[in-house]
Amino acid sequence: MYGLVDEHVTVSGDAGANAVHKVPALIAGMVAGVKSIDGMKLLRHGGMGKIFTGLRAPSTLGTHLRAYTFGHVRQLDAVASRLLIALAQLVPGLLAGGDEVAYLDIDDTMRQTHGYHKQGVAYGYNRVKGLNAQLATVSTPTAVPVITATRLRRGNVTSSHGAAKLIAEAITTARRAGVTGRITVRADSAYYNHDTIAAAQKAGARFSVTARLDKAVTAAISRISEDAWTAIKYPNAIFDEDEQRWVSDAEVAEIGYTAFTSRKKAEHVTARLIVRRVKRLGAKSVPAGQDELFAAYRYHAVFTDTPLATLEAEASHRDHAIVEQVIADLKDGALAHLPSGVFTANAAWTVLAAMAFNLTRAAGALASTRHARARTGTIRTELINIAARIATRARRPRLHLPDCWPWQDAFTALHHTVFPARATSPPPAAAA
Image 1 (cartoon, rainbow, N blue to C red):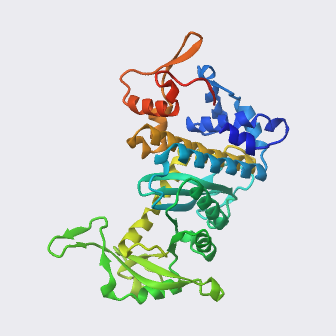
Image 2 (image 1 turned 135 degrees about the vertical axis):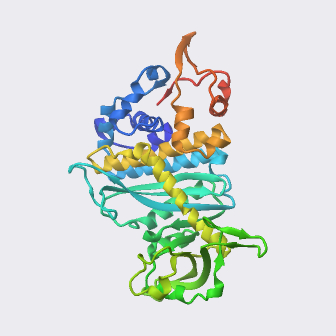
Image 3 (image 1 turned 45 degrees about the vertical axis):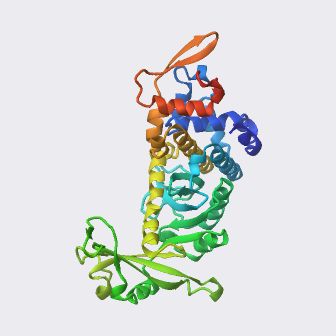
């Protein structure tokens, strides 16, 4: 961490001095659950100064963040990318299964702000005033997501703005982190456009994007024959033992489809349109003019070039919702607030939050199988925010940890892996 910051972050002036200590201190506070700049005083609370060195006051850390320009935020992006690559090399379980298949999920969220003095604040697509955070995560069937790229944007930006560049950077990071298998880019209908899909194809990845039900997609759905639909395992589905099939109110079918035909021919994309239909409980939400097609069912279309079978491809796309858990974890931590009135300071805060998230995920993967899949809040509560008594013996600080602690074995496994030479003693003093 310190070497990466020293090599890549070059904030000038007095505020930028000692970035090699200030950046790790900010990340350490976020790992511990700090949600604001003022909350960074946690780092100087109690006996923290006896265990950690390089601690800084919250005012100093806030001044440092406000000195960032867009170029400095991009320097932090470089640190975040290289940190994830290093973590993947040190923690094999972090991206386990990436040699076969991986999923890159992209999504964005509005972070509500208050007052009129934050730069870039505007009303977004959900009528919430704030700033828009976009992120890309990578996961595998056996490994939970880690964050590969982030952007903080103006509040009134469209969801897919800048997605092509973010996808390219995220795939590059994933490849350098050891993902050698097939990557599928998954996104919701806000990202259903040519630039997003072209970026995935250019990077050598597959795509699976929810298609908006425009006239062309609706016409394609209407051409699916009634006997092409297959019932799927869905909430309230019942398996018929005699016929060996699911009896469900949800069914799936597919049809070939060419998208973006309004563009020049070279930019047309031909792939599969996988459609899920669910029986309607009422007719209130039937789109105007589409009564005959939509009266009985609600339709959800996915435009994809995945080689998976129809049912597997549809189920795989539904797993795109996993990125919402990452967003929820960030909102439960450092992204609960965007603490500064300066846009670039908030952008830097967002990148630091992603690094803290990945560090916490790596700690969970090293601790136990259970913690490898736990929420970051659980890892923080059970392995990081631990009540301990500090004592000194032979001029060396020692931590006396709780008796009858339920997660002792997990913490011991984490400690012994990180500090193999000190398997019987606590870690030495280190910069926060």
